[in-house]
Length: 406
Ligand SMILES: Nc1nc2c(c(=O)[nH]1)N[C@H]1C(S)=C(S)[C@@H](COP(=O)(O)OP(=O)(O)OC[C@H]3O[C@@H](n4cnc5c(N)ncnc54)[C@H](O)[C@@H]3O)O[C@H]1N2
Ligand code: MOO
Image (tube, rainbow, N blue to C red; front, side):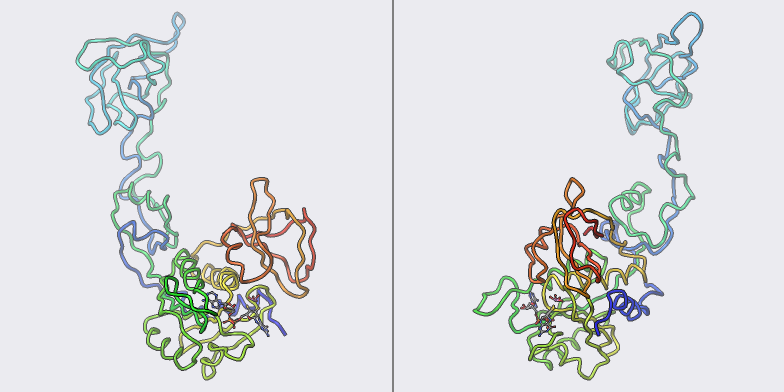
């Protein structure tokens, strides 16, 4: 009897449970840390902003010089002093004066507000060195001032261990002056597509052959999920050659993933090669991605994904990625939402179907291509996986489905 999607996901998680801890770590330059997982809490070595600075191009003032009273509008004519460009350390601002100040420039001591240039009369900066006055309106203290530490103060935790480092997180580390960061050493995966019919892209394509798309597709998916992938080339359908190829690359890997050779054909190379290994070949009640191999190869966790390209990606998204998320906290879980179908669909009884789709600007989800697991062009046009539960055989347009954003 076929195994449920949830049961197989649990089996994959169980297989990989030894990889959960402890993590080895390495210190890498910021850009090499994109997509990696922070190994330690990072404490801010300085405050952000590091000093009070202007949010506008305008005049730094003492708000007390621009106070409402019964006989005026609060505005005042102030003497213009030396300008404060960004990057300068300004002199103290004396009462009754206004310093031209640029966005990001340090507030002079004594100044506590900024009046934007648009509100000044005249609304242009006087030439430096030329004596001038400017009329400015009433202004509350703090106006257009970005206080020191208003984003984060020195000594507080900026990022927690376990955070996946994307553009925002790396930008923060750079803003804190850090040039490198301690990240978890990624899990190392050996990825081996199989099949006598499969040739590497770029080579000649003899009759009956196809190009290997699984290697690139899965390496890309794994790299995006923060894994380090080793490719040993494509294995043919000779089981002993596959064993040799695996054995020459398994040193130092945490997981082996193969594609193809797991179903019911006469030349199922992965099944045959794993004959004397504790690897089970199971049928998961899912389409695509039904036939799956799972176990260990020479004591290294092993997953045998089916050969069709869409089956490979669906296997990764439905089993391996969520298992890693549960065990390591990274990659982040896919964003899931519920969306009405833009069209009718049918689904095989007793199988969880995973269709490819596009979530459209109107919030509906359009299916891309049919259910066939060879349809890589349709996959390339998709931004989501559409989940159709095992007990559902038909859904009308407008019916809500669960969608995983890719
Ligand atoms: N009698 C049965 N036949 C099949 C069954 C079944 O239950 N009974 N299951 C079908 C399903 S579902 C799938 S999925 C496939 C899985 O087959 P394998 O894992 O043994 O994979 P292959 O036969 O080697 O290849 C399947 C398909 O994918 C193409 N392929 C393989 N590798 C690559 C690659 N690296 N890049 C691009 N395309 C690849 C291959 O040429 C085949 O077309 O079995 C069904 N059959
Ligand atoms: O389960 Mo297979 O992966 O549909 O094509």
